Amino acid sequence: MRVLVVFGLIFGLLGCTPAESGSPGRTAAIPQDEATCKAAGATWRPVCMMGKPACVVAYADADKTCRDGDECLGGQCRVAGTKMPPDGTPATGKCVASSDPCGCFALVEDGKVTAALCVD
Image 1 (tube, rainbow, N blue to C red):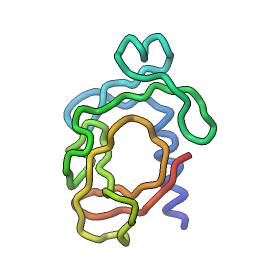
Image 2: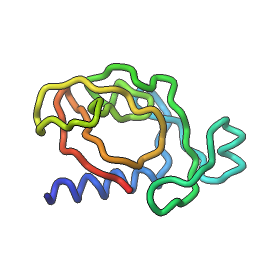
Image 3: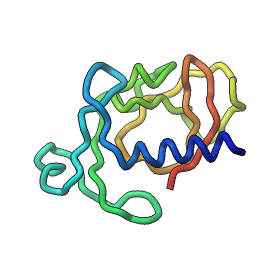
Image 4: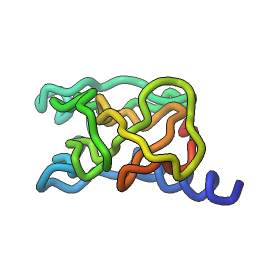
């Protein structure tokens, strides 16, 4: 349970902080205001249960098969589907579609499922 809380806090904070730019697995900085967001071609909209407005950037490699977040522009390789396999299960996933941090999912890192978590 403690692991889920830690992951939830980490990913919750990632949703509030711009990502670094660079190689695959890292996105360009996510705009923090509406004007800059729209100028970048992204969508300014309410996210998560609180409905706080944020910039949501769509990633070109959405749904690409992956074995680790480093293979994805958004930095996350998520287990595909709604059924979450147990931690440590060998798996492939799909690259995250956008910078929207909300929802319930399990990540795939180094070809294995990590703990499932929910970010709201």
